[in-house]
Image (cartoon, rainbow, N blue to C red; front, side):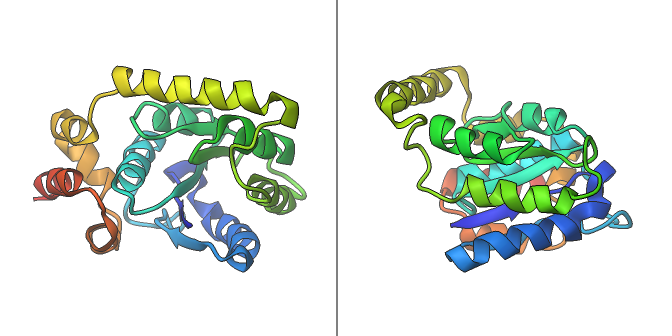
Length: 212
């Protein structure tokens, strides 16, 4: 599984801490981490949590990555931004129990973490424990297990509702503010990585138009 790490401006200084905790947990499991920044407080490419929502949606809908780890000060804005787009189900995660139950019950493909609120002594340990519980078992098995059947049914219902309520990602990109989108996709190596890993030709064409 390819897991993207995405940080916004207010918490960019924690990128290295988050990356270290994530890689320590997931690389021994055979997963790959791709760090899309921001790479620090002095990164010249500035991203808001709204732009991180755009970037996450492009990466997930294209198949360039399979999962996104992101956040902001409280995690709330990032969660709302990601859930504004089709093909993204993002949970707000504060502790390992949140991580486990979100993975097992909601079977999403992104998490938003609070990187400022409550992030004090032991913050790096909490990240490690969150990532461990997020990926310790196959996602979507249900919790408790006796609730697996209705939970899986409800997830399928949600997926069908979102197919109707959400518009195609290429259309969204073309109609959004061009500079907002270009800023979201303007990271140091985004274009090279995206076009080498994108599995959706229509979305790749839309991204080319935006970046032109």
